[in-house]
Structure formats: C-alpha cells, structure tokens
Image (cartoon, rainbow, N blue to C red; front, side, top):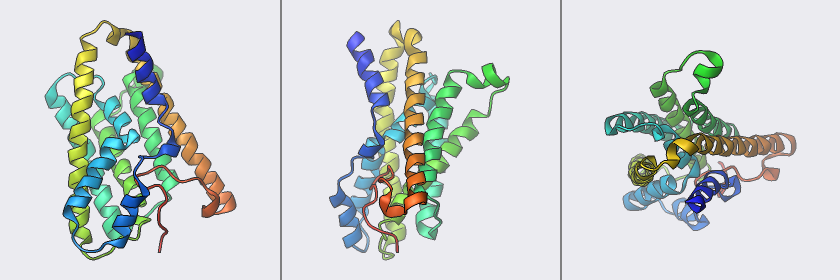
Amino acid sequence: MRNYKSLLLALLVSGLPALAHNVAAKDAEFLKQNAGALIVPYIYLGAKHMVTGYDHLLILFGVIFFLYRMRDVAVYVTCFAIGHSVTLLTGVLTGLHLNPYIVDAIIGLSVVYKAFDNLDGFRTWFGFQPNTKLAVLAFGLFHGFGLATKLQELNLSKVGLVGNMISFNVGVEIGQLIALSIILMFMTWWRRTSDFAKHAVLANVAVMTAGFLLMAYQLGGYYVEMKNGPAAAPAAHGVFAKVGTRA
C-alpha cells in the first residue's frame, strides 16, 4: 500500500514540463507536410494529446476528486469540454494568438486553483466559495487556447483546415473519455480504502505543487524569451513543443 502512495505522488509531481506531452516530432512534421482532409490522423493526434497531456490529466483529476455521482461528473466534464472546444477551434481557425508561455502559465494556475478549491481554501481563507462550474468552464477555455497556440506554430495548411480541426477536437474528446474512465476507476477503488480520507489532502497538495512547477517553468521561459529573444527560450510545454515556426 505504501508503494502505491509513493507512485501516485511521483506521477503527480514529476511530470516535468520539459517532457511536454511526449508527442514525437514526426507527428508534427506529418501535419506540416500534408494538406487536405486528414480526418483519421487528426482524430488520433487529438486523442493522443489528451491522454498524454499531463496538464489535462491533472485538471481532470482535480475536478472529479470529490465528485461521487456520475451526473455531477458529466456536468463538470462537459463544462470543461465546451470551453476547450470553443477556444481550440476559435484560436486555430481565426488566428487569434497569445504568447504560449503566458497561456500555459495560466493553465498551471488553473491546476493550482482547483487543488486549492479541493482543500476548501476559498472558504477557509476568504470566507466565500466561487462558482465551481464557471471555474471549470474557464479552465477549459484556457486549456483549449493553450493547444491552439501550439497548432498555430505548425503553419497548418488552410486546405481542409476546418474539417481537420473538428476531427482533432473529436479526438480530444475521445481521449478525454479514455482518460476520465481510467481516473474514475482509480478513484472508485481508492475511495473504498481507508487511505482516501487520510491522504486526500496530500494528493491535492501534490497536484498544487505540480501546478506551481508548471507555472514556474512557463514564466521562466517567458522571461528568457523577453530578455534574449524566442530562440533562446526553452520549448513551451504543449502538444508539439516548438516544432515548426510561425509565418
């Protein structure tokens, strides 16, 4: 039992930003070099992004941590999915762009926020409770925008772009369902043990720590970029890191 606790803590905290989402550069090159409708590849890469994106996994873990009814899980995950879809599609199709380091630092902040909320920090420290559904919707907006900034860096072909982005978003939602199923199975098992009540605080502190690490990495990259130029900055975490350049 002690081994699984150590493993959980290690998984939550050691998702180093340098590893990004661990998507091979050849996937990015494939997208850059191919035009037209690529429905199946984009669905696959969307699902792969979600399943391997530790920032998404952390926020899903935090969102459902204290949700016991499937109806509640469905409502909150839908809020996240709506936000994610809106900014992903809007960002890529309209070219709306923000600095990826800033967006990803905010994503790290969303992880911190949810863990702090799970620890009842707002009521304890500030005497009020923010609307949790609106907060999760906002998380989704930033997470989708973060992915959009990475896709923009690939200068994707305009031919078939709308269909490809819809396919990618479908893949993201498929990946979210896969990841959610795995997390729910783990949480269902863990809640039935005496260790859940003992270590719920530790788990959320670990999630918060991971969020702070992500924020620090991204803000550090932003500082280096502003001081020395984009070429000197480390790769921003994301689905394709910094493969490709902007037009």
